[in-house]
Figure 1 (cartoon, rainbow, N blue to C red):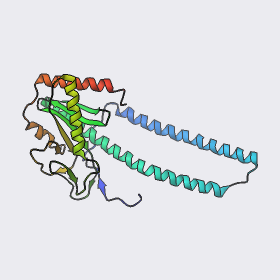
Figure 2: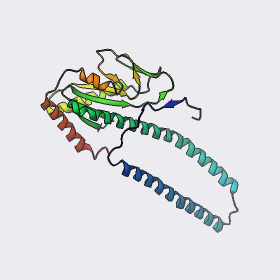
Figure 3: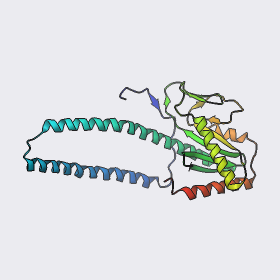
Figure 4: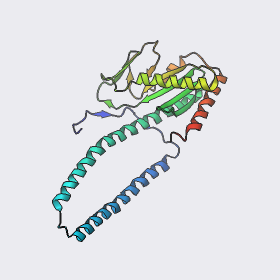
Length: 260
């Protein structure tokens, strides 16, 4: 746990743009941290006060050695618990920034007639982004993974990915396929029409090896997606696009209270 990790850095060259309400969001976070700081102090002082009253009532002599051992044990326990949580918090933050970054890039596809939805929860997880246009429906799973120094490449053979020589613990191809299958089934149940849904995995900021043409799942960098979309033949009519989009908008609004 304490060994020095390899040098790595975020794959994002630029931070994501600001979002609506971000200033208030930051203020809320700072106030929450400040509230916790102020709440901790009286709690600790009350604990000491109770302990001192207990010593006075039972006439217990000072116990510096006992308190020191307890303090060391608690500090060690806290460090063991905090370190992995802190790393997890960092990973969540990097993943959040990656999703925002990709989301802002996808918004530019409105000019090509695409409609975009973000963070669709299905009870088993969430689909980061969904694109709906005449070129088809696409589920997009964003992967924002720290890049090692030197050569950094994602290799894809149409079935599995290898990231800089390592196989990821969770299978992103299976995850993307499951997301597209769920979305296709939901839209079919909602509209009565069976629209094909293409699963896409985006590795933000990474170089992607050339993939087979017949791959069911696209594995791309963010910059490659518009070109792949451009080369697709139209699959949906404008009416189908509006129907599928309205169906998903209804789902997101009707389930928003369940996944907050």
